[in-house]
Amino acid sequence: MEHVDAVVVGSGFGGSVAAYRLAEAGKSVVLLERGQPYPPGTFPRSPAEMGRAFWDPDAGLHGMFDVWSFKGCDSVVSAGLGGGSLIYANVLLRKDEHWFVTDGPGGSHEPWPITRADLDPHYDKVERMMGATPYPLDRVPFDDTPKTHAMQDAAAELGLQCTLPPLAVSFASHPGGKPAMSLPIVDAGYGNIHGVPRRTCRLCGECDIGCNEGAKNSLDHTYLSAAAHHGADIRTSHEVKALRPRPGGGYEVDYVQHEPPPALSLRKRRRRPVRTITCDRLILGAGTYGTTFLLLKSRDAFPGLSDALGTRFSGNGDLLTFLMRATDRNRVRPLNASRGPVITTAIRLPDELDGVPGAGRGAYIQDGGYPGFADWIVEGMDVGNDLERAVKFLWDRFTALFREAPDSNLSKELSDLIGDGALTVSSLPLLGMGRDTADGRLRLKDGRLAADWTAKTSEELFNRVRKTMRGIADVLGADYADNPMWFRKRIITVHPLGGAPMGAHPGEGVCDAFGEVFGFPGLYIADGAAMPGPVGPNPSLTIAAQADRLATRLLENASAHGGAGGPAVTAPSATGAEPGGGSGSPGG
Figure 1 (cartoon, one colour):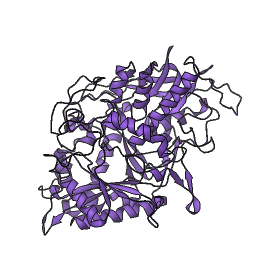
Figure 2 (cartoon, one colour):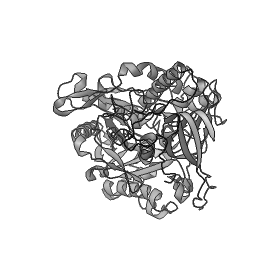
Figure 3 (cartoon, one colour):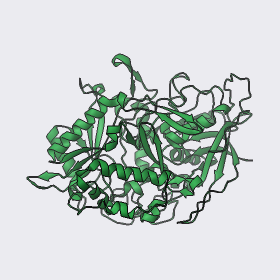
Figure 4 (cartoon, rainbow, N blue to C red):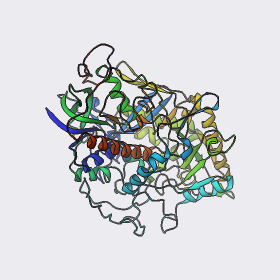
């Protein structure tokens, strides 16, 4: 049976960072990623390609969009080499210093097991690796980005703080170079895992559906390329199915290897053999849903695992709304949401914890965007002035592609929603996020992941964000439109967090402040599942920084033990079974 120092599950912001740090230190590392690699130029764009761009191997789908639908919320996460970095909006904001707490009853606050001071040196390292830089609004042609100026104008009028947040995007051919569009990007010293040329940002608004220019400094172009350079064995189309402790120490990981069908193939899944790899240390970075699901499925193999498993789930306060028909002195005000990166600005709403009495829980509001070729979708929202019907239609069809009819041709239905182009230039999505209440729970139901979550306990936060967004609309002379899902008390989140939270002890969390699972030495949680509550701003940077901190501690421990052999697993067992005696289901 194959054995390595460390197995890393998933290639998102936790797994990629951990794999790089361990490989750099000379450890033998195997990273298992369920999805496929996406070199620049291979992200789907045509209707036929987009119709197949979803993740459901049982239905013959091996695309990068993984849609989860739960009671109270829907989520879109990613399957592919680079995880969520393939479809996120590039924002690298640090968690606010005073926000490392969980709100308790009667206005009390319980501190997180980690602080901003703990993470700051790791934030620094991740920002350097990801090439964090603010949008170069003072440079031609980047100064011609109407939505950015509009957000700054609105914030100034409302007396709010607006910044150009650091973005993981290459605007220049090399660090410190002059920003310009579509310049060849000089590879870093560790090379490029895809071996495909990259070009700087051309302001196409396609960040969230994969950057075909390679301008995004996504994890495949940064941490994963560096990990491979240092010898990490990165295996795509490898999906982990079960975990268990290994007698004598370490862990066993069951996985299947997918064979994605050719483009446009209708071939269904063929049952794949389950293979097993063993390791001294196991790092879980499969995402909030993936990691929690694996632990829940494999729970019988981990006697004594904390009862906190599945708890503290939240959507990081995500809220999507729209500004429509912006005007300036009775003339159309151009916002051009399709020009620029998806996000360029961040308006910060202070928190009571910042020393602002009566402020409530803090939040961020950011400009949104969409691909230029999708302007016609936005036009569709104006049909019959029925935004709710149009957005509901689009979301229902989007999820139907995943759940029911991946090969449906929607041409006729969508053509009925196309307008004359007048709406597009004056419209803008707004993205909210903040300190919602982490009181949701993830659990298994009939072998599938289920979530118990409601927006009700965070309604005060959501109402504050919506009120501010209405103020932005008023300043810009725009109509304000809620996401129709809001009225059904449903949230669409792209930032799910929690499920295997860190805590001070097993009664409070699944893992400690360094991500190591209580009672199971050498088992680490490196992704958003470990967050004990909302991050507030976009959580990617905080997840990556915590993973870097985790790796530092793991390597220190390995050095202290001579780096040989795996740690002994001494988990308590209520049944008297040996720690390695259980087995998780290889199905799923």
